[in-house]
Structure formats: structure tokens, C-alpha cells
Length: 296
Image (cartoon, rainbow, N blue to C red):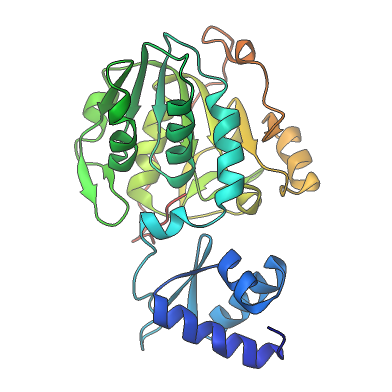
């Protein structure tokens, strides 16, 4: 579809209002523009107060300019499907039989759960998660996988468990690998999430793992959101995809974070539990206000 920018943006608003959420990729395909142009259109529409940007796309706003609702886990699952799949395969390749891991809530970590299921040779793996969707995804693999759900307070639409009580189980475990999703990875701003309660649980998970891996597609690099999970040096590795900016990857490397693009993941032996890890700050993100929600 070829049309002038004002007309295209008006039609984008109609589509977003009708569906309740539209992803950047969906808008790109529907209107025959690049994802860069689609993001630029959404930025313009948000400045006008017509929509509210959320990770992966946009949602409608009400008369007061507030987002009518956040995208559900299922809607977010439809965004960046191919990059998430590639990241998931690279992450799952690092897990070995007999290990224990944390899978944080999120659509990228949900893809890791699916990739782990496909590895028929894996056995005796313990997976701790605060994501109900992840637990249900893995249920069919019991008993070769042991699935531990953290408990806590259920966040609607995201199917995640947060404080109070989410840390009770986490305090009793120490795992080999933690795979943490996020909404932003920035050399100066650190690894961040749009939702404060989820950010606090993610920060807690970091302290319960020997090795910490952040998983984020290239669109999240350079972004900074409300809830800080930790500085980039608190993580041992970032797995991203080929869309990640080379300049941003260089900045992260200079800040002390190793970065691999999906398809170039290191050998599992490169992430041994007894390898040295940077210290992780003990404090959780400070609640500075009512955060918006996001599913990484």
C-alpha cells in the first residue's frame, strides 16, 4: 500500500484502535513500509497524542492521553518472532543435562522454553520460573525437566508472578544459569524493564545465579526504561540478533558486557558455573512511581 505519510498514519491509528494493539512488523507489512518508517510513524503519532508506544508496537489512548491497555503476553508474543526464535536456540544450546536454570518471564524466555523442549537429549534439568506460560509450556517435559514456580502475586495479562512473596522460593535456590528478559539494554542506563514489580524480581534472580545472561532482540539495544534490573557489568553475556547496531554492541563491549548475535553463541563450556562472575548489586529497583507494563 503506497500513500502519503499523513494518510498512512491516520489509517495506522484506525488499525490500532480497532485491534487494541499493533506491532511494528504488522504495520510495516500492512502499509508496505520499512520497520524504520513504521517506528517513525508511531513516534510521530505518539507525539501527537494519538497512540501510546509500547515495546514492539503501539496501543490506543483514551481521551486523557492514557494508554487504554497494555498489550497482553499473547499479543507481545507475535512481535519479532523470528529474532526471538534465533535468540532462543542460541540460549538453549548453552544448557547441559544436570544443570539448573532460571527462566524469567517474557516472550523471549518463553521461546527459550520451547527450544529446550526440542532438545531431546537434555535430561535432569531444573527450571525455576516466575512465568505461568513458561511453566505450562514445560509441563509436558516432566519428569525429565523439573519445573519450579516461584509463587507470588499474579500480574494480569502478563501471567507473571511478582512481589509480594515472589522472592520466597528464589531465596532458597542457587542456579547455574539465569536467562533474563528485558525492555532495554544500554551501556550507560544498564538493563531495564518497563514494569517496576517485574524489574525487582529480575534483579532478585540475578543474585541467585552463578552466570547471568540477558536476552534481547536488536530493537531493545540503546533503550532505557523505568525499572533498573542492573548495570550491564552485572551480566556475563547478552544474546541478541543480527539487527543489533554494531555501534551499540561496541558500546556495550566497552562497558564490560560480552555480546553475541544469535547463531554465534559460544560453546556451552564457555559458561561454566564456576567461571568468575561480576558482583551483582544487592538492591532492588527503587519504586519511583507507577510504572507502565511491558513484556520483553
